[in-house]
Length: 309
Image 1 (cartoon, rainbow, N blue to C red):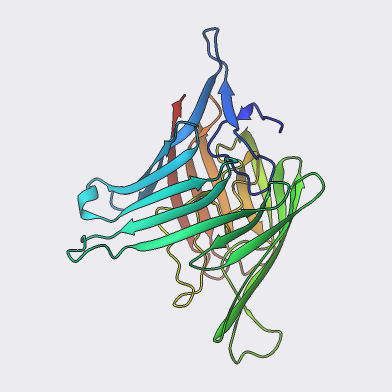
Image 2 (image 1 turned 90 degrees about the vertical axis):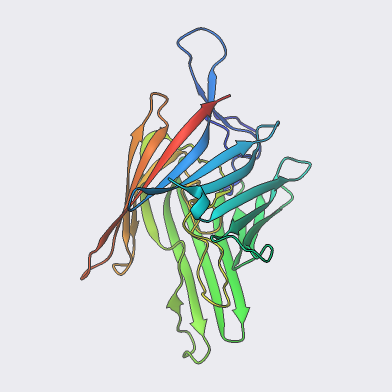
């Protein structure tokens, strides 16, 4: 496998299939010696009223992402806590992410915590063939002869509704520049051939900066603000922060600057970044602009901290 010197190790798996082993960010030290390697150790999602959700990433002795603990500041004792555990097989491939939400107030009658799981399956080439999100949709993936992601498809069937999705991916170099397709949900009683839009990846074009995407090749980093889907009670997607079944930000070697939907009824997304001296983003401001006539604007701020190893 080719190693990319400009990417630091965050986790071993690429949904797109390009990375099947360790990748790492190397920055030349001003003092001669071994190049410095960096990896994300803290992600902070800022909320109103000076509240923030902090996700602390921990790695095992083999350098693999092993756990994420998410808590609220300024006082984590009066808020929910989320614990994520990553499991790998003998080939160092991610097989499962299990995430548990510990609610507040804490239960006095024993654990009654919400759980979500991602299960990863692989083809003969060692590429991800399927991601099963046990709380919702499962997605299957196909690749070209160069092991680059080409398409994905997902579905779910229930007596009251059915969900079907199909996405095609177009790359320019190592950056995803276009997605085509989407996902629809059809409820019982709808006329044949009709469906409603379902959240997730849709037809859009993407632009990028020329800096390092620290999450390129990452399997999944859950958002501290979402997840724990129960598709029977509220059909939706887990809305991961990076990767998973419904986020394309891990598929490009550079950071996404804009996501422009093909349909005028969809929201437009832009990203602004601040970087450190290693050209890694330390701040990301995501601006979501709703379509006319409302045109409401929502901003989300995320901060990243790194450790050398």
